[in-house]
Image 1 (cartoon, rainbow, N blue to C red):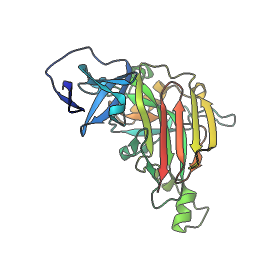
Image 2: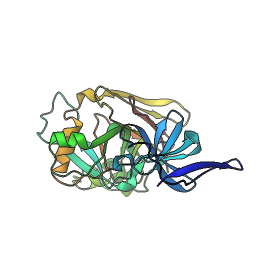
Image 3: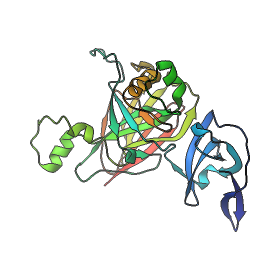
Image 4: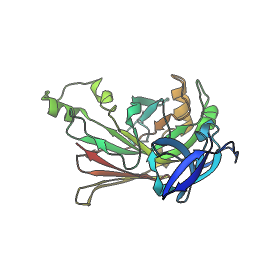
Length: 289
C-alpha cells in the first residue's frame, strides 16, 4: 500500500496516494511503527521515517511519505512467527562445545521493543535479564546450508532476553528448594514482553566485533549492574545457528533469533534494564508488577 502524509489542523494524517515505486528496501535501518491506530513499516533516516508499502524483507518499497520519528510509537520491528533463544553460544575455558547449536523457544507474546514495560508474572518475584545480538530472518528457509542461511539473514538488532527462574518460582509457590525441574526452567522463558528487540533492524550490517552492554538502573537512577562483552567470542556464526535451526523447523520472514550471552542478572520491580549492541541501538525496559 502507498500512503501520503497530510497536515490538517496541526495533525499528521497518512492517506492512500496511489502507486509509487522508489526502489526495494533491501538495506539500511528499518522500523515498524504505529500511527493513527495503524501499523506501518518504514526506513529510518536520522529523525525521519520513510514509510514503506510493506515489510522490507517482503519487497516493501518507499511510498514517498515521510513522518517524524518522534511523532510515532515504535513497535517490535518485525512480526515473528518464531522467537528463538540460543544456549551455550559463547566460548568458555571449561566447556567442550557441541557440534550443533542448542536452542529454546520463546513466546511470540514476548515480542516487545524500546520503552515497553515488562511485568513480572504473579508466579515470580524477580526476573533474569541478558543482552544479546538478535538475528532477523528475511526469507523462508528449511534444511538450509550455512551459505543459504547467511543469505536468508536480513539484519541484526539489539535484544534483551528476559526470563523467570526456578528459585523465584519456588519461593512464590512455597515449593521445596533443590527440586529437579526439567520442564519448568524453559517454560519460564515464555512470559509476555520477555523478548524486547530493536527498536530498529540494521539490514546488511556486520555482526562481528560488536560490544554488548547491559546495565540495571535502580528507581533512584543509579546503575546497579554494569556488564560488557563482545560478539567476537561467539562459538558459532549466525549462519551456522540459522542453518542448524532450519534442519528442525521452517524459519520465516520476520522471525528472530536471540543469539545468546555469557551472563544473566536478576532484575526486580521498579528497575530499568538498559541494553545495547554496539551500532545496533539501545533498549530501555522497566520491570514492573
